[in-house]
Length: 150
Length: 150
DNA sequence: TCTAGATTATTGCATTTGCAACTATTGTCA
DNA sequence: TGACAATAGTTGCAAATGCAATAATCTAGA
Image 1 (cartoon, chains in turn blue, brown, cyan, red):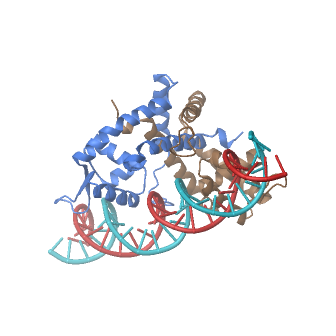
Image 2 (image 1 turned 90 degrees about the horizontal axis):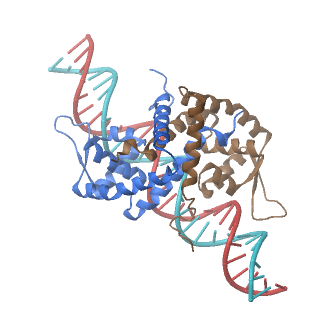
Image 3 (image 1 turned 180 degrees about the vertical axis):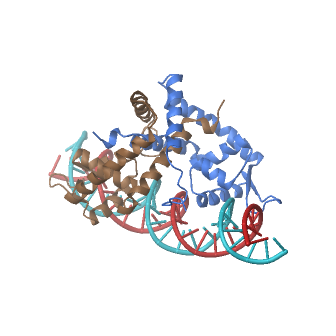
């Protein structure tokens, strides 16, 4: 029998919102949002990325990301380049300052995660991550809202 | 070694966003948002609730919820009452129409959940839920943003 | 080669959201 | 009892968000 408060989507959202709230507060003094942090951390991981790829990774609309990257660029935390061999895409990279900031913030993320999973074993955490990845891949990506083939 | 794309907060957000997107699309024809559905489903579960309690359950700001419940009330899906013995609080209840709509939508939520966890065993799903609840309780509630005692 | 279509990002616009301020009511304790 | 504090909800306002439309570039087929 179905109960909202025992359903996976609900519990997922609840945990996700809370963890994001806590992290948002920690990075607020640097005037960063959680999405901004994810962009920076992603670039630290991959060195460079296009807007579209970043949008996929960060799970936000590309239009939102365009503006978000714009403000990061204004603050000299990232650079935006249109390659000569491809004038459509925009390559985003960390600046040295962006990299320094990211390195300073990552330990906070590590600590937050440790707090969140504090009473779980390594196996439990691994199972959790696996489940989260599975659910993501079990659901359609649906970029063009109500689109069914074409 | 830390990797954003292997961190729990990131994976949590990614799965949560995607599952919410899919559900949002399914209930869009009824002009409902996911938060609205959660309010309705919560009231179906508890019969009645105050705004503050609903805000906690649904994980949104009470100001947002106030407006959200306002539009639900305008559509006659819920009723708002200030009890005579307590003029501060507002009791929200489902109307018959709201109940009918909720009953119609709940199977969609069930099916979505089934799709999301399709390749997991009952034990795995139970462990997932347990982990999600734990993380939620492991993190501070922080209603008043940067507040530390007083 | 030239054109129609696809891809990628940006911008306009309306909606949603959250924080802060405010109102109203209730609780407390001197 | 009376005043001050605490609680509950609403509203103003600015910021963030998403969708749709647009611009610019690239790709592919005739």
